[in-house]
Image (cartoon, rainbow, N blue to C red; front, side, top):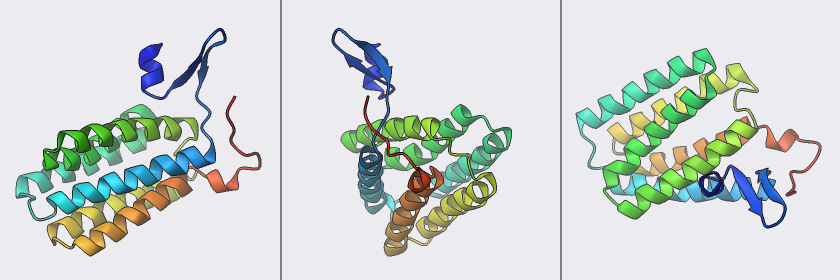
Length: 174
């Protein structure tokens, strides 16, 4: 149970038990904002140091991501998506940045599972892969201002895919 709590899947309350997380909209936005900053830090550190092997590795993750999306296996899809972003973080060789990036990705993936990222399947499929391809292109061109803009867009689109703004009832804690 403690591991589930550490991974952000459950909240444990003394004398009450464990409950599946129900994040507020503000908590979800805060998590995406933190991820935005971590990803920007990553890109600032690596954009001039990418090798052709790094690019090939990222392209492979994008291909794998497309395959898992087609099967609608959300757990596999989220794992591959995480690997794409962790490949970038690992390139920094910054232990703390790597750890915090992995933790925030794990937390956000809980939210993505709770709020079904495949709601608008066609839009999601077309845009998600395009975003990763655009990031890769900007990395190849070592275009840091564009990379930072793309990360902002990527985080905004990720929030939009969760259809949080369309919810009639606000998200609340138990």
